[in-house]
Length: 198
Figure 1 (tube, rainbow, N blue to C red):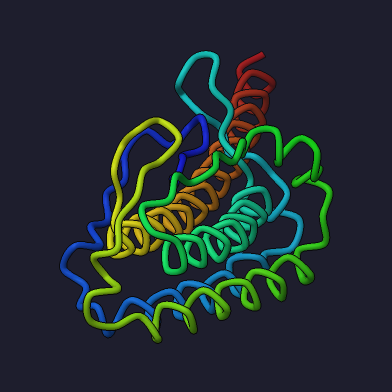
Figure 2 (figure 1 turned 30 degrees about the vertical axis):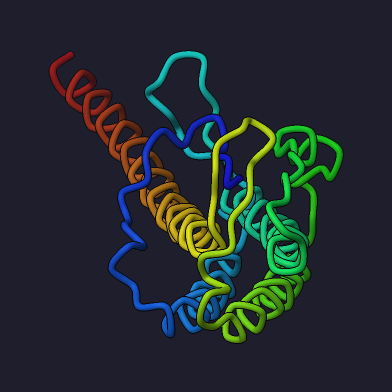
C-alpha cells in the first residue's frame, strides 16, 4: 500500500522495532520534523542533483506533499481495514497525484500545516487500535496480504524515509553549491595566475 516515489529504491529505517504504543507518537514526531524541513527558503522547491541516469530526485516540497497525501490515503485505508472483514484495499497512483496536484508549486507553509493535520488524524486512529484489531487482515489490490499493524508500520517507515531523503537532498544541494563556488574561485585564481605569468 505504501508505494515509493520513483527515486526511492530502499528504506533504510526499520519500523519493526517500534512498540505499538509508540507508533502514533512517532507519526506525530515525523509530522513535527516536516515543519522544519519545509522552512528552508528557496531550497525547499529545488530538486537535488542525482547520479542515477534517467531518474529525477524530488524536492523537499514534493516529498512533503506526498507525505501529506499518503496520510490522507492511510486514514481511509485504516478505516476500511478496521470496519470491514477481509477487505481489498484500493490503489492510489502517487505519480498521478503529484502531477495533478502540482506538488512543486504548492505553498510550503500550508503543506506543513495540512501534513500535520492529516498525520494527527492517522496517529489518533492508531492510538485507538487495541487487542485483536492489530491483526485484522485483508488484501491489497495486488493480492498481497496485510494486517492493520503492517499497514501502520509501513506508513511510518515510508514517512521517515521521505524525511531522511529530504535532508539528504538539502545536503546534496548545499554540497553542489559549494562545488560551484569552489569552481568559480578556482577559475578566478587560474586567471590571475595566467595574467601574472604573461
